[in-house]
Each structure stands twice: as C-alpha cells, then as structure tokens.
Image (cartoon, helix red, strand yellow):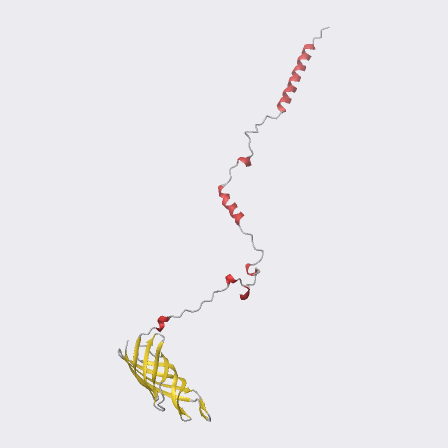
Length: 237
C-alpha cells in the first residue's frame, strides 16, 4: 500500500545527507605550497649596520680580572746568565787625533832655574805641549831633558793669558859624593804667555821636587823646590 508521505521523507533524508557532507568538506584544511612559503627568518635580509658591531664584539680582547700594574713580571736574567748572542757589545773609545793636531809651532831659548835650554812648543786644541833640552849650570854635567803641558785658564790657546800646567823630567842638577848627577823629578806651575803672530814668550812659577838619591852614607832627600822659567820663541809654522 502506497503511503502518501513516503516521497517527502525520502527527499528530506537526501537533503540532510548532503548538508552533513558539505560540513565535513568545509572543515578540512586548505593545502599549502611548501616550495613557495619560506620562514620569515630565512628570507629576511641581514642588517648591514649591525655587521661592524658584531665584528668588533668578536675581536674585543678578554678583560684582565685584576689591575695591569699587579701583573706578575718575570725577573730579568743576570749578566752571566744571558745568552751569548744577547751579551752587550763593548767597544773601545776611538781617540780623536784631530784634537792633537798642532795649530802653531814655536822654537826658541830659555832658562829653567839654572838650566839653559833650547825649547820647542806646540799649540793644540788640547793645550800647550813643550820640551826642553839643555844643561844645568850648577853641575855642568851632560845634557838634561824635561817636558810639560799647560792648559789655558783665562784666554784661548792663541791669546795672551794665564795657564796652569805640569812638568816632569830631569829638573835638578846636583852632586852626590863628588859625582855630578841630574835628578829626575816633577812639579806644577802657573804661567803667563804673550803671543804675537810671530813670537811667543812665557814666564812661569812652579813647585816640584826631585828624586831621592843615595850613595854610601851620603843621601839627597826629595823636598819641595821652587821652579822659575822664562822662554822666548819664534814661530816656525
């Protein structure tokens, strides 16, 4: 027997099934394209302004945990513990011979106490050098020789002025036990020189002593002796 509501019920069943199917289809996630989508961190371009800061931070030295003035310092090795290649070099000083080159030369005659002499004088940047050769009148015994050096006090080498000097050699003519001798000795003097383009005159006063001499029971003692000298010379170069 045909029921009049059967078609209506069938239509409602089909309509409800279609609605349920549509709801399930709408709840499924949409497909994603992995090839086109990239993480934001991967696609973001690096900031050029931050690159130098990062390099500086990486190159910064490690901080010292305590003050630099308290750092431990190794004790330097002793002089005799050094390696031979690090030993200090010792060089001898080289003399400056230019300072001894004479500026002027003089030759003349003079007296040194009782010694009549011929003398030669050299004027150099290092002072006045002179030598005498003569004979003592007290004993008239052979030739005697002495030499000396003077340094200017109040003026230059080639100017009038006072000088301080020393001398040494055979300075006293004497006799011992009937024998005539020339005694060695030395002393110091103060002199004054007068110089012109062609002449040199020097007067000096000094104090010195001769050597002691003994012959048998006779003896000559060394004692302070005054010395006087005067010379006049002509320029030879």
